[in-house]
Length: 320
Image (cartoon, rainbow, N blue to C red; front, side, top):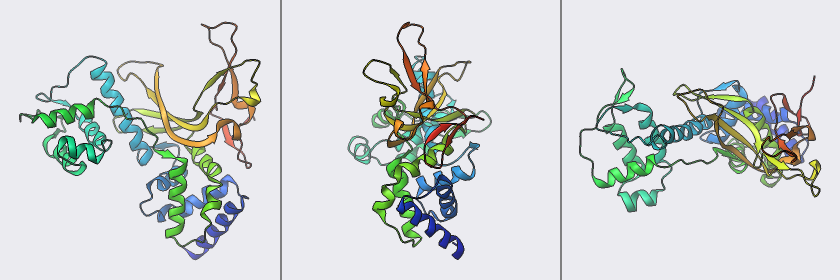
């Protein structure tokens, strides 16, 4: 890192620790440290997003969305459709990608105690035995009779939909602190931790309305949201007192890939420890009509495409 960049970065760090900083300073710090993250993948993914947030086709978040998408796709095209996967015949190459991704979600103890293997060995086995015919984008038929344990493990991998966030407030701040340490900055960890919500908000803003291009050709879109999207208005609560749960970023993609649909599958791709209402203006809480429930008033927490993050770290709909 250049000397001038290091001095400027330390000034920003000091401002963060003092609680006197802006979203632009967070963006500047992440960009300056982007090339010096040294294996802190959550930080690097957040920094890459600042540099390229119109559309993403690589990185930690993109891979995570892709893995969830593939498991959901298998559910729709096989489990939901009551269709069996016959590996003695050619099958789509994306299923091989799904198997390799799902292995990571099985803990090491289960792999060893139940299936007498580990992540590396079984991943290598998939790679060696499931050969792809590039001309048809399919896996070649598997002629070998599989041992019972192999069949059981394959069934376990294909029968799971693992939905977990790629980034949390804790992992983002952990990686930030690690990057600052390995680059020799003077820091107060506790002071940085106290600003974790605001730092995380900056990453969330760059994810908002960003499209993630899954390499199977499908698109997922991310939006800032909350744990509880809607609430009923009663005499005991008001817009000011409503609890929509924690802020999060949701990734969504069409539930059915083989036909037009408005139905989407959504899940939390980034989770925080921050109450949605704490950093949100009332303009983000909007009335919601439910035709099936006339006379009942609902409101929804719904940041739109013109969402901005003010210098005081409040989320607000921009009106020109």
